[in-house]
Image 1 (cartoon, rainbow, N blue to C red):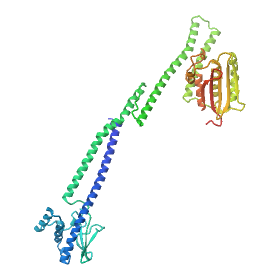
Image 2 (image 1 turned 180 degrees about the vertical axis):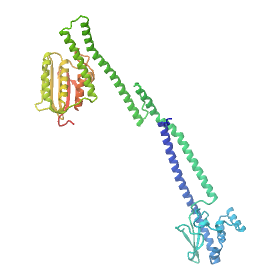
Image 3 (image 1 turned 90 degrees about the vertical axis):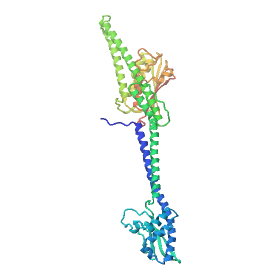
Image 4 (image 1 turned 30 degrees about the horizontal axis):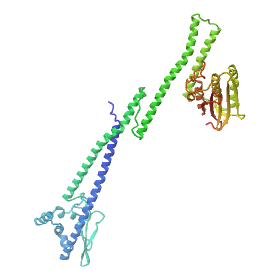
Length: 484
């Protein structure tokens, strides 16, 4: 059988309840200790006042007897003196009646030994009387610390001393009753505090965990593929921030899901186009409409190569985004790489009636990178410009130092790109549906691959309007001394 799992609501409730119980217990201990100590101090003060009255009786006794011997031989006389110091009450009358009837306390007739574990309670059990030579007349010495002694005077000379040990427990019935009442009141207050805590903490825990339950329900919908749930940030605390972050996560997932579906749709469309052409050519040969001659085979081969390039571009782009493409970095002159690639593309430019021009810094443009990938970057950018520039136009490549960068700009003449399309040029399969688009314009993967190569080299690539009237692509790569 699986153990019961506590929810956050009940864990929070138990934490608040435990904290309240700990506070109540601590307060109970402190209040009890403070009350006992304070009440004992109060009793001690009262007993000290009573001791002052007893002192007067003792001095009168000595004045009359001129000796302590009678008090030492007969402790009952001390009880009589003690009774005379009591206020006019039933208690005084009771003690006097006890003396008349001879009913005396056992502890007075036979005092408890020093080894007794029970602390002395009655004031007379804690009273000591000494003579002028500090010999004990009445009582027992208790512990190692003597009480404060008050001298007994007769004709301006000390004839003895009296002292009273402080009480360590409550002795009188009314004291015990008062203590029990206070403990009962403290217990009732503690129980009330606990029930109030339970009554407040359970609804509070439910309220505090409500956003978490909403978050959990919304998260389950995200898992099932429903990206529509949104949370209302009801507060500005951590839970409110969590709700805000969840909403951003849901929006990102919804956007990514939309992009994924568009990506799949675009890939299917791009693959369908060459496949349809190949299928038509093959079926025409099978039906005898066309002959399997060299021209037909060349068209089939061209369609296969176009399909292969598309698949390779998709593979390169996916591997690059997943970080699976290896880059072999070394120092190289980017200016030299540009010159070599422009010479390679000169024939293609002349074939479509375009002028290809390079303006480069005479100093070496040294960067750290993968030569093969950077050559692919430059080739893709040049091919993109050659494809979409009107015949008789110009494609100009400028390379220069822009510390801490090496900057390469590829600009071409009309047609241009609408401003709203510039930020999307490097997206997957994006193609401008305007005058720059061509039937043979490719799948829209070339610039996306270029962006991945530049990012892998810790650089940047942006698109803008060219002063020549067409598109300007700006690539910035760290100089050799700046690359990390």
